[in-house]
Image (tube, helix red, strand yellow):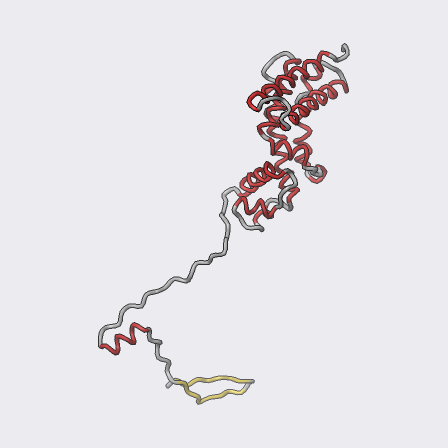
Length: 246
């Protein structure tokens, strides 16, 4: 018997004893004792696995969320999803996006910036195909239409998401770079504000043709893109040739 000294409300209680505690017997050990056989080693049963979804862990969570959002935009439009839906589509928890994006607009702003960078890359490559400034504008117009068709979700985000660019300086800068990259070409054909107007006119015509293509107004689907690009080139050439003499 072991003496136990306890203090209760400041009073020491000595002399109390407690009997030794015998180890608990498993069912196997009790049965073995009754039969006179050696006890079997008890099996350890692991705890049940949780069935609560924990989400996947991505090495690049940001890109996973952006891919998920692009898929949702393609299905429902730029405002047809929530950040929680993007999380589910990416296979992560609802709290995961906040490591990178404060809200849905921040996610859309990141995608819009990506869209502008892609446009800048494509349009810059297009105007390098020919030394003739008129043909450079024509190639730009065709590249504009193709981007709108091939990257519909990014195109929609850059033009219809209604993002407040004043909150996202990097987005505003990327957007400005898209058309300013064409200024050297336009300035070979027009001076001053006319050069800026020329870029806007060509871009507007290409934008309209892209929307016509989307609505199925340019003929059979297997011919529509080629027709849209052809009309964009022709319109760009006509606009360039209609400029007043420098």
